[in-house]
Length: 124
Image 1 (spheres, rainbow, N blue to C red):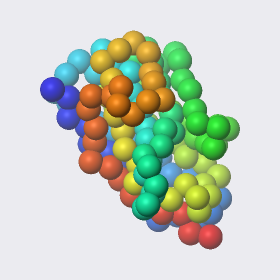
Image 2 (cartoon, rainbow, N blue to C red; image 1 turned 180 degrees about the vertical axis):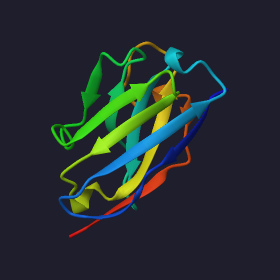
Image 3 (cartoon, rainbow, N blue to C red; image 1 turned 120 degrees about the horizontal axis):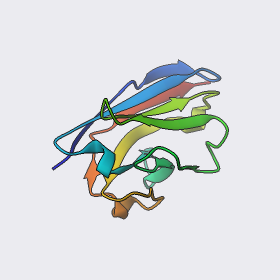
């Protein structure tokens, strides 16, 4: 059983940066591909980024490509989401998720473990 805890959210002005962290415990972190998703009020949860268990393969939603970077430190059991050039439309609760597979996925139901989420608010 994997437990995930996100941190690093907050309030930032448009154009600013934040780095989200997701610490995993209770499992062998390197056995899991990881993903970041986000959800705004009244909207469905949407895919943001994913990374393979090795860290060599990453994939991003078009809306964040070139601005966000996903990375992981298997020794620390942590996945990160560096968010630059933030826009008001990036405002959402951000969730990390773990998938017992070597490859990541854009599909939320393919992830078996989820964190509680961290709020990111971008002011204009």
